[in-house]
Image 1 (cartoon, rainbow, N blue to C red):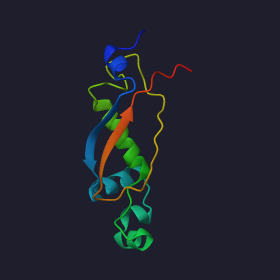
Image 2 (image 1 turned 30 degrees about the vertical axis):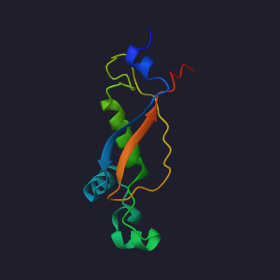
Image 3 (image 1 turned 90 degrees about the vertical axis):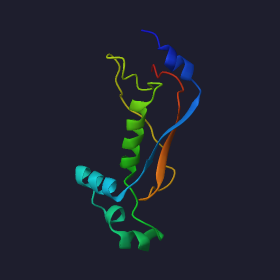
Image 4 (image 1 turned 135 degrees about the horizontal axis):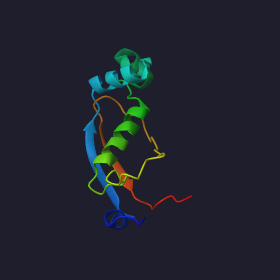
Length: 116
């Protein structure tokens, strides 16, 4: 099975999409779903003592949002319109802490199929 034309046309192009602001309710919901109630995520006073700002969002919350953005991309980088396709993994680099109130966007580039 060959690559779709949208996928082939997207090779090497950088895309920026999916702006989303981190809210306190999103961080609390993620903590509830994962069981990660670390104080740096939920306690404003404790977070201020660590880094002088609001609580830090879970790294996997950012990663989960990134994966969700990819599923809605018109370029279909995850091939969700191909019933035989599946995601077996992805890599993400978290370059800095994300705090409540920060707005995230996903910058991604299609490098090519991993056939190995």
